[in-house]
Image (cartoon, rainbow, N blue to C red; front, side, top):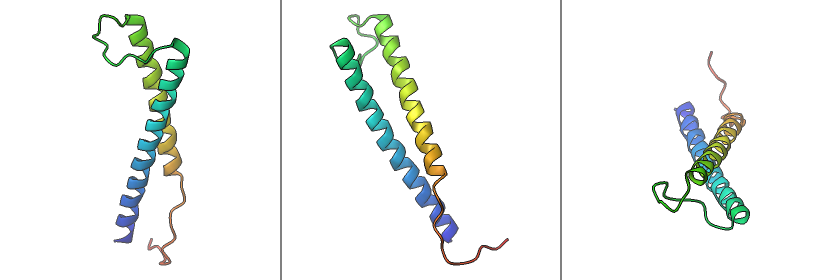
Length: 91
C-alpha cells in the first residue's frame, strides 16, 4: 500500500513541477520575444497580419523551449530520493 501511495505522490510532484516549469518557460520566452521584436508573440497563426516566418519562428522557439523544460523537470523529479518508510523491502 505504501509503495502505491509513494508512486502516486511522486507522480503528483512531477506533474506540479512540470506545470510550474512550463508556465515559467512560457513567460520567459514571451518576455524575450516582446523585448526582441517589440510586439507580442503571435497567438493566431491564421491571422493574415502575422507573417509565415514569424508564426513558424514562434512555434519553433516555444515548442523547443517548453519541451526542453518538461524533459529537464521530468528527469529531475525522477531522480529525487525516495522517502524512507522504515519498513524493510521484501525481495
